[in-house]
Length: 246
Image (spheres, rainbow, N blue to C red):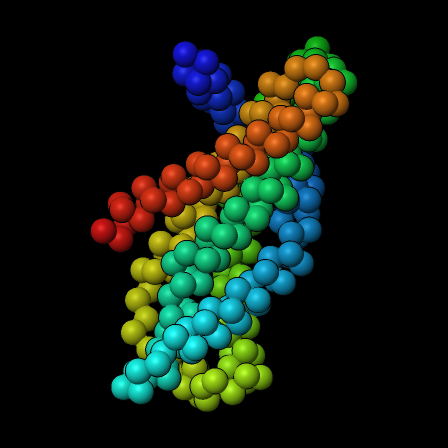
């Protein structure tokens, strides 16, 4: 019953958050701030992880191609498919759930325990709309950009690994990247990313908005936001894969 109660409160809060903003100028200003906080500040960690993921996939694939009948270009093909279909949209989203989700929950939770949200209500402002909607919007717009960035860096990391290790010729790797490409795989990755972005921002916003107590409870809410978001990302990864690729 507690889970059903929490789901109901979550849905009501999100519906409240998605009401039309009272002042478009204020919403746009907050949206720009959240672009910086939730998107631009995550570029560094996304770049580092993506390059190394691409390099690792390339090396592991090359080492496991023992059959001489297998073409070297399969390494590039494997790196491309794994980065687009799973590693960039899912793994990077899990990383962002930890970085961005905890940040959102901590920020809104601190405002709750210091009664800043109550002050917004007194001033006639819809706190859910003012605090949560810009973060959801920023995440759903910026996260796909980060994922595209991650995919390209992952492919580049695989090329660098082939160049440094000499496991396969770099031209064969490039040929593999260009072989048997289906554009829908990129659409699939972006659809997943948008869904994951909504999950991260909305769950973190809900946990922060409904926190009760003090700083300890804010920390606990941040941890719960990361855990719940991660579980939901994995679950919806399975659901979307079955719906879009099966």
